[in-house]
Length: 387
Ligand code: 3PG
Image (tube, rainbow, N blue to C red; front, side, top):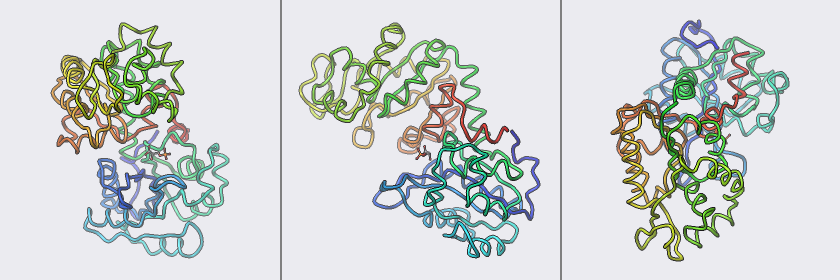
């Protein structure tokens, strides 16, 4: 896979696929680490004299975060203190004119690519290369740069369709993420996995793939509570909620792993409710929101002593109940080992808890792609770039 270091970009029309998919609160996209990383890539292309069209998606159809990228264009303009155009058309003279009017160093942002239904088909690069929009857009560009590591598990048109048609490169975010994740996949053989978040089904692949190489798996969030539920522990109210929301869909596989690796998998020794912390066998009929203080202290001690730690997913509902996640993230910053944070929500904890990216060996901005790559799966867009 070629990076852009040696690419000839000056005065060339560059189609840059980023992942500017941001959390949207009250209708407003929120700037995150992800946004900051892509601003750096966009700036590099602009500084090197490329005429860049930034392509990205935002949200999924029918969800609240399925919005236009116009605000994102304004954000980029503010950040770089440079005029940034926004183009709504994927076809026709409006797109052609927008590209033709760009001078060296100019930046234009294209509307949310998921507004096109063709984009969302899961198909091979060869099939996507014949998509109407891919064929049409490829006529305007000399170079395609894919920097969207966090969307690389999707075999969508903008991620795989352009590679058979033009000179294609991996962007710096893509390269950096792959290098760091490869380092974890190759060298992570005596560390600790900290797994939380909302979706136990997401982390099962990671557990299966990595558990033989790790010393301990520390469970928090819904996976931690599902593990307790399997043992007949935890809050009835929360366990019913887990069932109602189908977070127990992977319960069978989880149970098998827990039996086979009972010496490695650790579950919370207390859980936090609005009324206080309780041991898993004593939780009253209350919702539980976080790991308890004793669990956080125990996990933090293990993390501080570990040679390597990979954390994916917060320890609880961190917006209103941050203390468990805060303590664990803090322990990672205090460790001298190799520390990796992965996932959209997890990487946002860096800023939320007042840390900086330098406090960790690597912070992955990816969620689904990170989990799949760590589970040993190939990523469609990475394969397309390598081919
Ligand atoms: C992400 O935020 O994980 C990526 O942008 C992929 O988004 P998706 O899960 O909607 O495809």
